[in-house]
Image 1 (tube, rainbow, N blue to C red):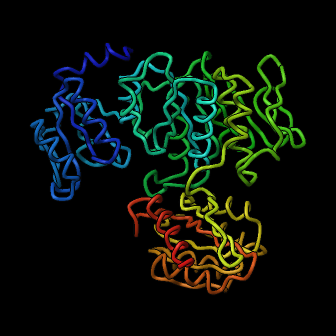
Image 2: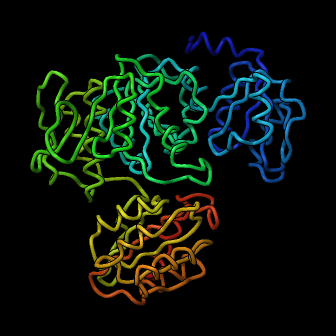
Image 3: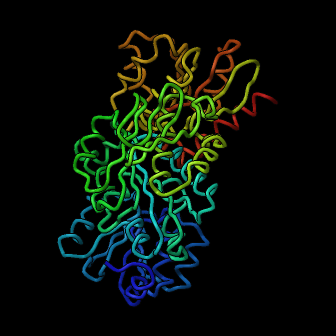
Length: 461
């Protein structure tokens, strides 16, 4: 396939419908318009709900819009570019596919437009931490780098200007992987797979197969980094055509990254061993973060980054916002923001990291998850459970079924934080780890996490 400037030239005069006006959709509209495509826009929101500046832009460019409605003739377009938040099973999308209209996502478009190298990282949990760490290591090594994707900065926003020596460190969600075709990262990684987004993917099998797409276009010249301690991911590795590179916290492996006692080691395909650092050097807590560090070390080593830069980046990395983020100590009580913990597995990871004396704030849009495994983790760890949001009752029922009774219900985040401060004792840990999406009460998990932190600040007034 053609990429880069040749592909951009092929877009001139092409009739393209951009579906969905989230961050990536808006960026795709601008990139396509700059390339000379004839751009139309579809979004479920009506014009009065759109950002006024962007609305003015599309009006000035005289783009056709379907706001709050759908196109009546899908064959008027040669290509649909999907925002990841829009499911592909919508009837007009399915009709377009049947009529042989090409349907791709923003990440596929960005790959085609760009001339740069791609690293792609996915998994149910740990994507943002690992992607951020890889980006920091690449920057420490002096590489031209953009940290993009599901982490918040659309890939397409950086793609057109990125040259052949540029590296796109890309966090990739299952929603983005649904609509790839030619996307081929030089290094891909799957960190773990546990139940999530089943309201969209319907079954675990569908979710797993979508995650596996990250490696489907790779060849032996590329690398697939995978968690060999996760049996689902291990099975995906068996089907990859890339050179497979495992990582493990359970001892030495043939090649890849592992922990030897407390040392973090990367071993080359040739068997050469490289000490990166000691686990005590890490500034981020929890076994899950050792796994994230191993993944990042393997990704960077097999992408050609020097061991010294890998070590420097890992030692300097302080973590990411909203992921077991220490927010401060008030009246001898520690507060942690894990708003990015949007599924039960993420919340379990946070509970294990903080170990005990935890007052847990949870709840939101449960995405049809089973909370019994999370509730089973409460004994010996969680002192009190504070619930809010749409699916609070489902979590409460799961907790009571496991014999946990110390439960409070609150109407909003300020009430949750006040209740936590009221019942907390010295050296307790108040943890926001919702195990749920935020959409029932907030626009996104970032907004929820910032609100939590602002509520903590109120305690100091």
